[in-house]
Length: 529
Ligand code: KIV
Ligand code: ZN
Image 1 (cartoon, protein in one colour):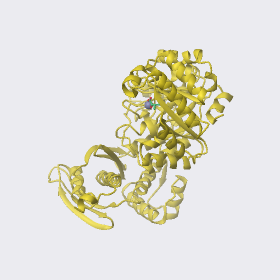
Image 2: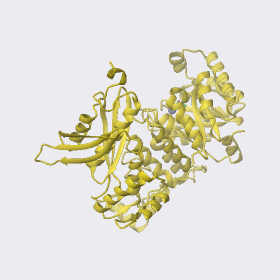
Image 3: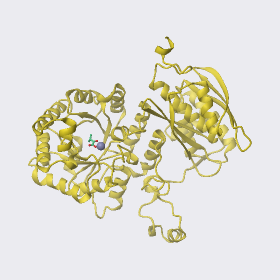
Image 4: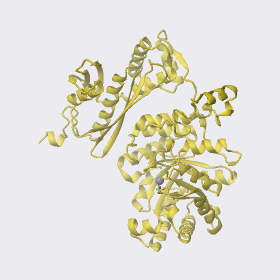
């Protein structure tokens, strides 16, 4: 059988956690990630303990194919899944891309609601049934682990849904996914639909039923849990709930609800919950998609107790106002680790403990930045080192590199940025006035590397730790020709971090339009006439 099917058959209370951050999440506007970022997230998801990683939609582009293929190579524990429409080309691409994985799945889907079949597919019910049979049969040639989805399943007629599900299982699908594609379902209604499938589909015991809920009415998590109570044993979800429109069901909310209310939902999963915060922060850093402060589980206020009455209760007994501990989701005080007296050897050792292995050059640069930071910041925490080193790692292969920055800010302007960078190793400088220091810095970058077509879509600052001497972590999003890139920068000086973040995003933009000359901003074709 398949890994997931075996797990659930052995333990009927086990729920498979299927993460689609890198597919449904990544395809939503502003969440695009490059290969390195996808690999980093895939490693974290694997460590987190998700059962299945939906790594992408391989037919979408060569970049998507490569990402799924690389993820299939590096993932150690999870099943790696590629998405495919009910088309031979899609299924072949998915099958090829997941080949290196130890455990591999193809997820193929087709719309089944009257609305989608008529207006989107322009296919009748018989043709859809045939496509279900053919797509699953072809997918089974690549792997035993085939998942079939009824897109817009929550708005599909019961009789037809049963027919499609029975056909998919007969063709060899071992997971049947019922998406609430447009986030329209209500929990008791969605549960009844899942229950209906168990009551009416004769071969239902040969597959796991899965739920995939969108959050348009804010009910994605509630619908997913209702589905599980009705017998589903796979939940499809994303970190921070990112995904199309209002997003998908949030993994962290599902997992913590199952854990906290085990009394009512006696189900098990494989998630190491103490790794949730790290996955959430890394994702919002990569995508520049901040988490709202009052977001359940991972929001900045999720474990903060502001009112006097609550604080008093917490001091007497934490259970008065806390239904789960901050430690259970990995929210711990960042550890104090080093000081300005720490040497290079101790620095390297600490980085190894934190999971970083830097080459000699990157290590030298990171150590110089650490010494500089330690001169300015009294206490260096683990989170400071992580921010600093991650900043160094993302810059390793950059064409445009930050060198130095002097800024005039404050009430007696003009606010001016004097910026030095290297472009392909050649030093360039610009001194530019702006409407405030950040504007001046970004204009200076534009003066050195023209990129008129790109628009700034996001500029966001976070503090890495507490205190006024905390390092700033800045995210910048640029958009050009409907393509977006996100850049990050970290430094004790917010303005330096801003310059680094913008330069990081610009480097990524240059890679996206690889034939562009970074000095002139022109394409090779245009430059050569
Ligand atoms: O929301 C949806 O219907 C999907 C399918 C591709 C599973 O994402
Ligand atoms: Zn979806």
